[in-house]
Length: 283
Ligand code: SF4
Image (cartoon, rainbow, N blue to C red; front, side, top):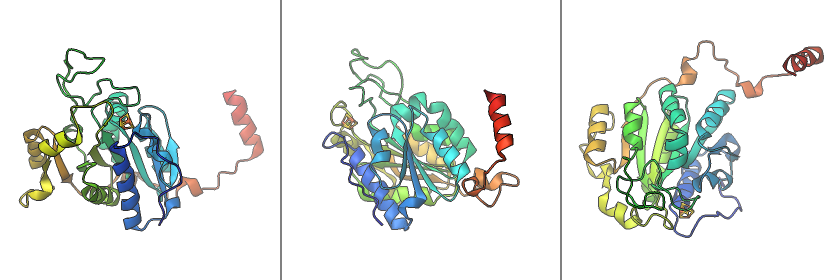
């Protein structure tokens, strides 16, 4: 399957988002789905451009709103594989409320976040995942706030699938995206995706020195929520791999009387008189 298109990404050379794009494309190809069975929805930010760089249906939405769009899409056509994607500012700043509710709602969609701990598109301001003390042009004496840790937040909100990857390890990232897509319910893959232009602290080398790869620990059990939270706290959120997975029914499966036929296939033809009455009512 061909998930590449001929659009050249407008990312800086070395940006971590290239690997995320490639990992999603490889995961989809490995899963054997057709391009027309997939929709990639994104928000705003450098990473938000990703929906235009993958050969599937794509929707580049508004800031922080990738998840509401993705959930609506999935409800209307549950036959689609729906992937939402975006950055840390988009998803854990303006979009944070949507994130928490998407976690607890548990629709069968995958959220891939490109976490570079900075606002890249607007040229380098502190983001919700920037570390305490982090210096940028908006925090010249150091960030006085503490960082959102996406996996900790997701586990606390009751997520059924949480994984974390690193742009430098594309094989692991591909596996994690595959598992996330296969999971029935809301799945999060948070990716440490360095911004090589504006974040000179959280670089590829910095992550290599600090990340703990859970795949190297044969005793780690990703079905134990308490253990997962403990590991995330122990590592300061810097662990990669499949962190937590739990099988439970998705939102769609629990809706009483949810029709077998997706709404997108319903015949929505309406009597012209009824249509005119509706328009008059809303005018
Ligand atoms: Fe990537 Fe940073 Fe360049 Fe944006 S500014 S494309 S996040 S390296």
